[in-house]
Image (cartoon, rainbow, N blue to C red; front, side):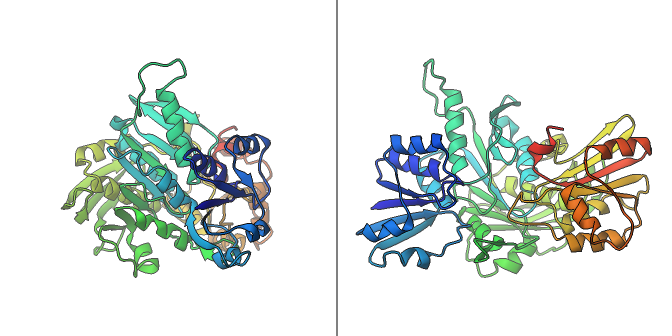
Length: 466
């Protein structure tokens, strides 16, 4: 069977080369015309041919088509180029699961997807599983932890499924330097992979944080909820109860662990919570949680961690459910969450010259996230609130009109900044302060002797350079 890999922008080169190395006959279609010269040379080395879809007219027999879940082409549109071919269609996620089917059978593996909270959950999981020297792929990079020391394998790396394979390869190279010596399969005992649009199914547990917005993908032919349904390929699924009920009530799966802030029919839920901008105390009840060892476990656990808002507590519940699912003991969960202090450049708290700064930086910030962030302050009038951001970061764009309506209702001192801030200001029917450069917000807060809540829709790497 020949193989056609579509989309070389989002990891197709890695998938094509991996399959060619296994002896498969592979073709590629560069739908977005972004192929770099170095990648073209790599394809040439492994005899991977570039084609256009029109070239399918010359194919005969069987063809496996590997496509990204967000592809703006339907299977029928691809088949129309040659209806006589016997087609098999799988996603990039499924292809990575096939490529890595013999990898990591004796380690803990977790895959994380969702609309919000993915990266925060990954790093909470990392802190809980730190003794297992975790291999991590997240929007902050491919990382590995050796005796709690962070080693950056690759900083600028996306969370496309192909980069799961890239992270595994990079970790192998770290363990086996060119100078030789005894070959080591790995230097990690667990792996945590973040993915934006679903998971591969490699994980022992798949965590779906939430579907707070079901945005459109694939040229408006599909949705986030449809893509993220791939999480049910994992043997155990941990999922927000509200998302499960709304989008996946017809899913048949043997091991689903739901979590909720309010719904006591969920497997994991909050019985009491005391919020603090420093350390939130959360009492959690869990009932009949399915584990990878085919057990049903129940109990109570109290954790203290950095979770100043309800959306952060929801992330904590997902992480607790996930780690219980892989039989992590309660003390390890408690200690790991106690050590979690947020992510610099994402959600974190710091004190600079006596000024408390809370940063909420995320490429997927939307109206609900902004509202949740502001609610953390509990009407504390000592905070200056700055809202802004950049465009073209993720599939989901921000609803400026909705944010404008939210700001109009607030009796707060607000400064808008960046491209997003400028457009929001133009939709507000009252005078709101605006500055072009977000970096000046920190100085303004200092001059006014006010604490700062900085909410910014941007890529972490961009703001981390400030």
